[in-house]
Each structure stands twice: as C-alpha cells, then as structure tokens.
Image 1: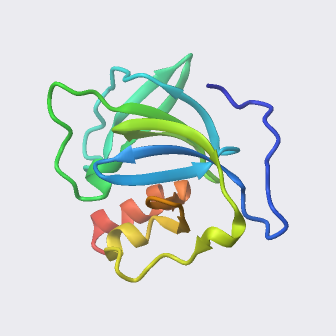
Image 2: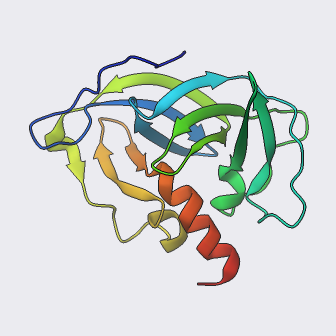
Length: 161
C-alpha cells in the first residue's frame, strides 16, 4: 500500500475522514490516510546504541534510512511474543518519515465527523499524550494517533519530562 499521490480527504471541520487502522494489543488505532506512506512486513533492524527504549532500530527502506518506533514500548505494553513479528506502518510526520511497529494492520475506514470526541480522561496519560482524539464507532473506539507525538512524546517520557 503506497500513498504517494493520494489526495487528502477531509471534512468541513478540517479533520481527515479516512484513517489507516491497526492494532497494538487490544487497542484500535488510526492514522490519517494522507500520512500513511505504506505498510510493509517486518524488516531487519539495526539497533541504535543509547537510543530510547521505544526506538527499536533503523530500517533501510529502498535506500532511505527510517527510524522504527515500537508502539508497544511507547505504550508501556509487554513485548510482542517472540514467535510473532510486528508490521511496519510507514508514516510521514511533520518532522520525518518513521516506521510505527504495530501488531496487526486493519483497513482504511471512513468516519463521520460527528463521531469525533476529545480523548477521554479515562485513557492513561501516557497514551492520551499520543492521541488527537477518538472516533466512537459502533463496536469500539478508534484512537486517532498523532504520529509526531510518538516522536516528541516518547522522548519526553524517556527523559522524565
């Protein structure tokens, strides 16, 4: 799945109306389809000495070196079982292109803006800091991930800020 020339679909409110979805543990996340460059299978990674624990390593994607961010680590979940491999959701943040390591990739879904809500206070603060808000779907919440916050928020978490 490559989105080099995908037009950004937005509503009148300015929020995107299409999201690439994925799961990390039992949480259902989405990221703006315009930010998702591609989804790839697990790639071998080069460890980065002295990097924060959520930086799993670097991957070489057709000659481009990309930082792989382990969302399980960032969310303070247990590591994925050793016999399972995460998927890479390659996203363009404001700062750079990064790979988000996720458990499973879902579909691209359309959402209605009236389903959007601010992030509930009941969500743990370290998770809430990574979200733009939530969409109330029929069966569950879609947590709207802020790709840039995964870089900034994770750095603050590691440094104790």
